[in-house]
Length: 396
Image (cartoon, rainbow, N blue to C red; front, side):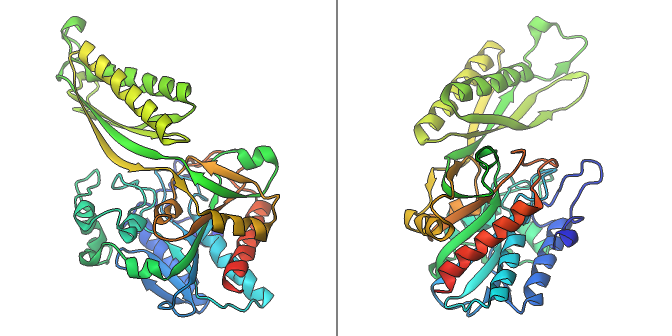
């Protein structure tokens, strides 16, 4: 399975993956998923929001146990973020069949669409739509950098966007959703464990900062006469790091656009996107407000107009304790339980269905990068742990 997926959407220059929602690479990944489902005799379907499902048992029955993750990527992402969960789900089913497990509940493997939000700027679009946390109107307003709307992209890829929206009937049939994911940090590497159980997802969000100045000639405009938005933006980037350190949180300006974007021109607009995350809501509010206040002061100092827009926000997600405890019972009480600052489809679905997560050790802690890596033995350990969990949940 890895050999088949490895070349899909991989950039020859960076070595990273560019599997953006509703593009050719995404279409190839979706074709791969369907082929894996059909090769195993599973019932394949795509839901109204473009999420893919592979069913063992009756898709319309209740008390289903679902596993899976996503196949899309961030710009120049790694091979494991998302795909590890999908590949491991198919491999876990293979392991359970090898064991001769007798399923008493329907089992589904899923690939949620547009989890990373790399193209349209909003993470977990597929699961947000299903859970009713993103309305059809809001989804229709999403556009990529080329001005292509989400429904236009879906239609171009062969999916009818008219039916997108909340899917409560489907979610009501799910008794448990377990997502396996590569750890995006080094907690397991430091503890020496191959597999861990998630406790919670930190609250996190994305904010857009628009610094409006005045375009002018870079070679003839005196420094004192300039209204350069890049200065206020640069100082705000440093403020984000400072505020995050004070609160024990993380804050990153990882995306920027500049107008008119000329080497010899003072910008008229610098737009930067802030990603901020913290262990609790109070700390996150402290960080975000500190950055906003600092940005306002810098903007005033340089004669810049500032607008700040919150584009997305996810509060803290505590995975259901009963399901989390059941995973610990199945895998053994020694299995570490850890929190994460990364968002996942499991976090979005947690408000609608019982959810849990398994993490597989990442020896470097690097993620969202071509350097992301996982050892094969740890991948196998993840598959076996997931198989044990699915057997405990769906074969009782």
